[in-house]
Length: 258
Image 1 (cartoon, rainbow, N blue to C red):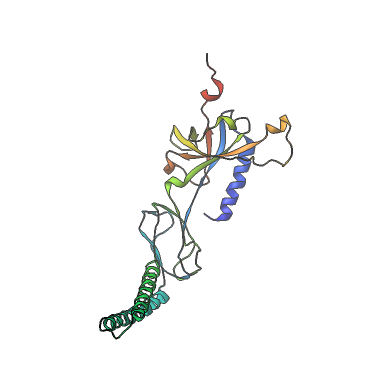
Image 2: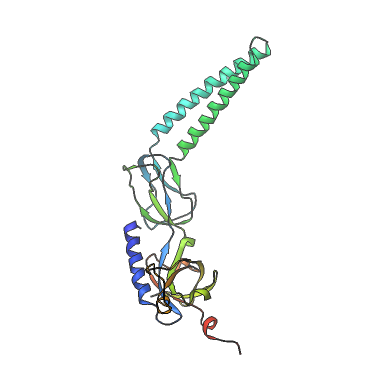
């Protein structure tokens, strides 16, 4: 999903939050997600794309490949360097054993061989990473580059959504905030969703939202709202941007001990 669309969702969420809940225990919220952006280590041209938007993928499955001409050339060069360095090392070893060569010449040849082998390992890794696999199990949410297009280093090609990265966001009044605890279970309802859905509170903001930086009177404090996030027990039910209603457990607030 694009950054522009996420910004639109945030505005919509603000409007929902400003309207308040349907009653003292229910608050309007929306579904968001922490996407996993997959990008190549180095710039290059996309050669193959193995997935489509909406595809379910598992960790380790191929996503795309980037042209590897430069990495192949670098690998061949380092292979030749290692071959030469190994030959120099073997000669220095023989000369040292026959007392013709010096210990320093042998150590220099050994160090050169180790350096060449390290560069070869690095070039092999760079080449292998031109074939990019999924780091997580999830769903392909968006594809930003297609075969034939040039992708800069660090720019995402594919955005993935692992189920565990779905989260519900809503706002609660300042008076309710002290009564909400992390890991507390809340009820969730939405249009067309199964009954008895729940989520667990995973984040409670420490600062108020949508309020001016002034000293608040008792009346103004009732208008303060704080962001709360919850992780649903059934993330497969929800879609990013979907409006939801969050219900807090009634007995906690309105039942007093006898």
